[in-house]
Image (tube, rainbow, N blue to C red; front, side):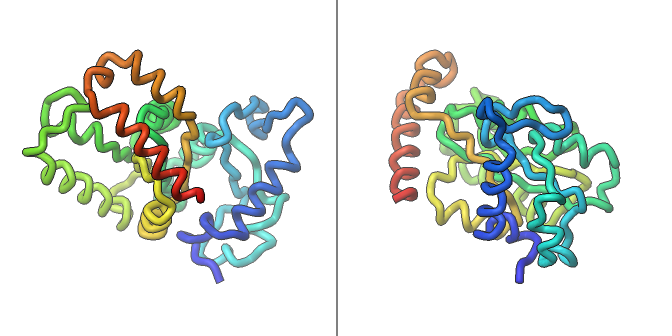
Length: 233
């Protein structure tokens, strides 16, 4: 028996998702947004939207939750548009997404691209910038406890669905499977992996005026990929 908050991490859903994507990949190799008819160019931007919205009452009815006729493939932005169209926060389940990947993979840029006004975004770099008034990538150790206290407060807002937001995006590295599994269970979240290769992350660092002057940043990138590869093994 599934609960709604854990259904999207289940083996059944993940296998079903891949079957639908494979079946609807066109001859040109692209999967298309079934509302806008535009190709979805990034795998992590692809959402399977249930036409009959899943609830705790129907998630174990496979004629609804695992029925290909009940899902549309859409981009994340289209998915937000579908839900925001109704502008009724009480009627729709709030979505929580863990957006993870290496430093400089483009996580924050992706969230800025897809989010709607009124969505909740938890980004540690933004928290550090807000409370320190410094470069968003400079993290004074004296403010470490304060930064994590702000983060924990916002995580509680997500965990207990406080406020009137429709989507929440938690941006972080999360290279370890155990860490990702824990936070997705705790928050009832879905994962979005921004799968930018190491070489591109390092190239971006070399051309980034704010971060290229921080000696530790190359090490942050290398360490993320080291831990991620350990998790895959």
